[in-house]
Image (cartoon, rainbow, N blue to C red; front, side, top):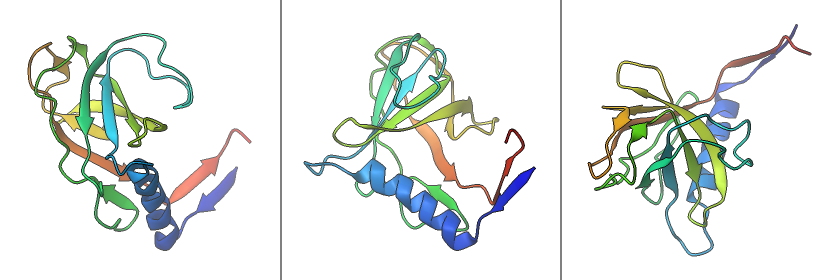
Length: 147
């Protein structure tokens, strides 16, 4: 098994890279988070193949402060005042201000360990949707057991 251990500086740089892409825009428009139901695609480059767009949340610009120990916590994200559809929020796609996909992440309620944590994952059309947290954590170690 191959093991790759990252320094704190490398982990912080990777977290900052996520932020740089999220904050990128040709028009200085903040990034967004598309909250979705259904199955997360294999890659952010793939179009969603099932589920619904439940809410669109807008990030601040810049979206976060400095990463610490490989952890980047996004600043408070503007709530969607009226959910666009009803369904169970299972994943989200972060896009830059020009709509280019950056990353797909899992969603759990506040008791879970998802990248995004919602107070309630069962979204009802017309109700307010907001994030409790969006935390990007870069791992200290990666193993390549499938190599």
